[in-house]
Length: 390
Image (cartoon, rainbow, N blue to C red):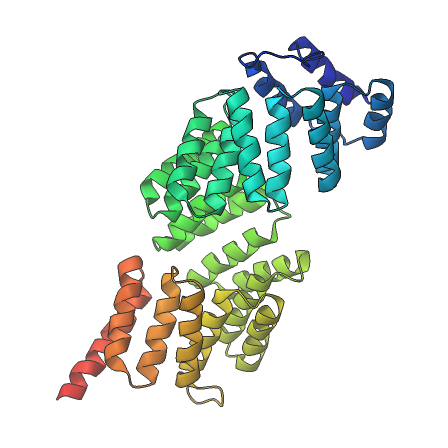
């Protein structure tokens, strides 16, 4: 048997779970530690070796747990789910089996099943950290942020200490607009585990929203340093560089994102805006339309195209009415981003609907009061409105 797998199973034996077909409900606290060890050891996923070991010992729940993990690492999700179910059949008291099965269901988008398995894991072992973390993920995905926050906070109370729980809490606070709390938890996550790229990215998003573009750039670079094969990080860095006025460097980074993932819609939507900054209007529109073809549900593409149609005066593409329709569609698809209201306000203004332009830019300013360009838009709109009265 692979040495790492053997060591892992020995750890499980040491924890007293080699023969736990009738583990008392209160006992599996140690299994949480075992699950953490499974994660930390990072087995190679030697499926054949594990399958051979099960032929010799077909009633080993632990071996099925390892096999499930190996399948999971190879993205063989149906096989992983079956291995977890087999482990549970052998040992109904394995909270690790239930939370592991929940993690597979979550990856398959089967949220109700994932929810039920995690709750079973907690019923078997109220100190099972992974199950609370899993519930946090499920409720977050469903947009039920307060419930998600409850379970992530519970996860932080249980051993072992894990930076990802603190990151998730920070991200929920960020989504709720509680940026100071979010920053505190992102920094806690980094203090526990400096290798978590998402925590740096979260800090970058907050700095960008606050108008500190240089700070945002620095955090996104930190994130990329820790995970250079994540194309979305390059798009985020490109956005921050664009805001900071460095179009050339922004283009370099969005190109890297597309090289890594040629079907990443938001990268094309971003590259379109960079081409527009270089007054390459035809190329800009082509890029954004490519983003729409890849992902018709990406609201950002519609807002970006609206901005081009609203601001390309002197070209054949100038079309404020179409810009209004596109910007409204973007907001209908996703009403949260303040940038979408800026695009809609500009479209209204260029279509001589100045009153609506002022009302709409006020929405953008209420959500992002530090954005100087929104204040500049409002000043321009109000000046035109006052001039029209005289």
